[in-house]
Length: 75
Image (cartoon, rainbow, N blue to C red; front, side, top):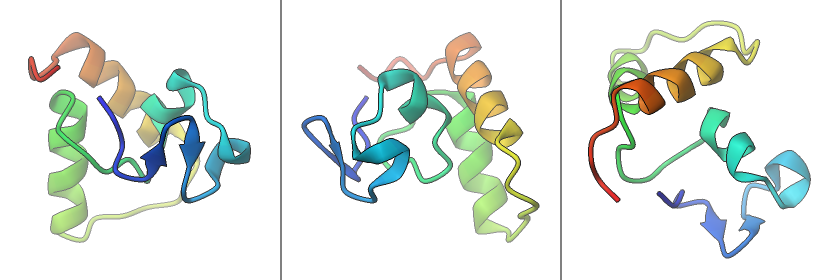
């Protein structure tokens, strides 16, 4: 999957030094693109209803883990 904020190897938001690895994109809280799995579904729903908390990075890790366990099938 490709994030809407990424052009080639470059992050347009200049996150992760501007050239993130795929593992960094997987946990990025700013990911925007096609749904990769259940983690993205939950993150989008939580964002839309306004539930946000502190940015400790654990949400991104959980999101990536859920995406890996329950992918959408979009390739």
